[in-house]
Image 1 (cartoon, helix red, strand yellow):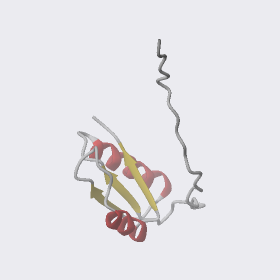
Image 2: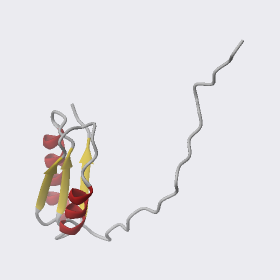
Image 3: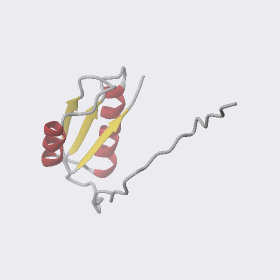
Length: 92
């Protein structure tokens, strides 16, 4: 009899989180829409709430071609260069 363990094994690399800003006032907020229904609406609402509550600066938006694919490295570099804080989410 063969017994199979469905848990399997994984390995993960430890990574350091990006530094967090002390305050959001005046910072440009980036939103990365994953192309799922309502994702843009959710992200825009959160960005709007941050603007009202913390006085953030402008909002820049990007959209992935689909929910099952990652954003292209060039897009991620563009977002990192243009924004101080970025939001991404999944919605339906």
